[in-house]
Length: 236
Image (cartoon, rainbow, N blue to C red):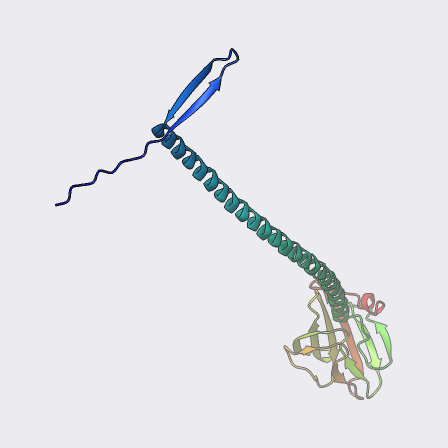
């Protein structure tokens, strides 16, 4: 067997020479172990500095990306805000137009309601043609018309036929309820042309006047009390 060869390790030593101001010289010896320790420390510090530099570079890169993303988000939000502003302006205009339309519709409905109310009042003339007229001198408030043949007895306002009954003096009595506390009463000896419960408009024919039924007794009842019909005829 061959003998083991011994390995020799080279040893290094650093000598530091320092000359003092008085001319003396001092020598400082740094052993290899100290140098290795210093090198190791330097390596650790270098690795640490490099690592920190790398981490800082990554952090700076991430920060830049975040700034870019935030800038894009801000731009998107700005565009969206402008779009919402334009939409809001459009909606405001539409609301204004809608408000005007609703206002016009309300005015139109009010006008129609007013016309309906006016047409329901028994202010019209109860005959289709001219006739002699006199107020009853006694008894219930009533106006008596003397009409010519072929004249029609017509409703003085829109309403519903409340009743069609026999009348002791005039033959037939028709009562029209106008739905506003007013009723108009038509007393004539002709053939009634309407039925109870029928809804009719203003100017609807109730009787046709012939030679045997030329007299019409006309009355107005307001709030269940007979009043002078002239109060409504004068307004008609």
